Image 1: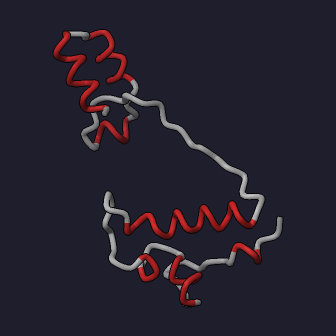
Image 2 (image 1 turned 30 degrees about the horizontal axis):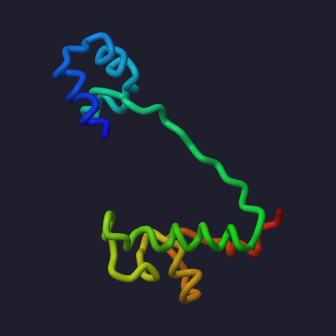
Length: 105
């Protein structure tokens, strides 16, 4: 969507908005070739207070690598960059995982 917005701004000759979008790019992104910052960075923090909600989020996180958009693995439970192996097979992961039930709160 961002590429389409920039494309249309260029087609309309809206240099003022394009300049503002260029100014919004942080230096580290600029070094990687990013030219415009169309959207404001955001973080949608959710309090994980119920077992149902926690399990819903774990399911989403664990199954995300197999969705068509990403297709990072065939089997979500063996994806090396996920805690799914820990939860599904009780196997250690590359990074230590603490079971959500063992976290005080």
